[in-house]
Image 1 (tube, helix red, strand yellow):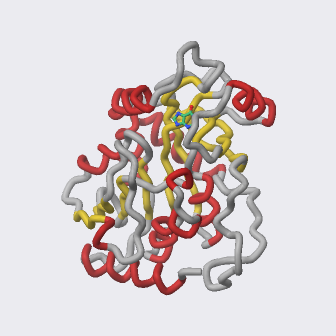
Image 2 (tube, rainbow, N blue to C red; image 1 turned 90 degrees about the horizontal axis):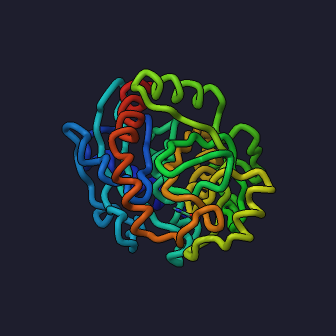
Image 3 (spheres, rainbow, N blue to C red; image 1 turned 180 degrees about the horizontal axis):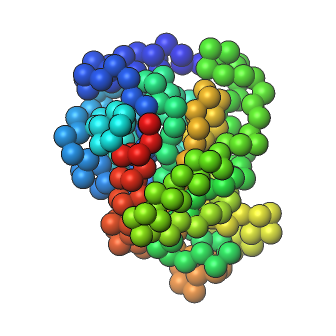
Length: 273
Ligand code: HPA
């Protein structure tokens, strides 16, 4: 377990940003990284400068951390993340989130691009996660537990708290943006799902399919932080979509949704305390 590495990364972030503490962190998903550029007066810390930080390897994912104070409290904005399908260890995948909590963040906003697997979800929809299903057979808490981070056996009942979702919906509504709600199923990737896998996920109760977010949500909750998950439906999932799924389509939908996504994240970062 990498308790000391997390502490060292948090200390470096405090030193480089001049902010001893941050309160809220947001992780930007595929094609959504452009949001970071709109943060006024942000201090950029390239991941490469942070000891122990894994460096993203996929086109369309950035690679910097931004510190800013758009509202009441200092926030961290992760532009780019690493995924299990790139071959990273679970500890690497959740390093950023753990560092954020070690930096003082009590709320972690996890965003992603996902496939719409039912419930009338359409490309371009923004969807709050109300729960998740872990279909990747991976978990960042496997291995010796470090009691300084959190408990060995972790209750997952209220990972995406209802009050935080209600607040997000209100903030979005004030900005004229609709937020739906759904359950996210984590697949390992990097293949998109087969149509049969999407049907299975739908029958199990999933509305969204994707390749991220769940390990970070687990790690954040393990350390006692609240999680808000927001998916951008980038495409209809396999078998529901009449055409094959492409990374380009995912990126294009994300870019097209940029203004609505920005309005929601902006509202959250300005309002959360
Ligand atoms: N499946 C999994 N991950 C995704 C998808 C999808 O359809 N779209 C964007 N990320």
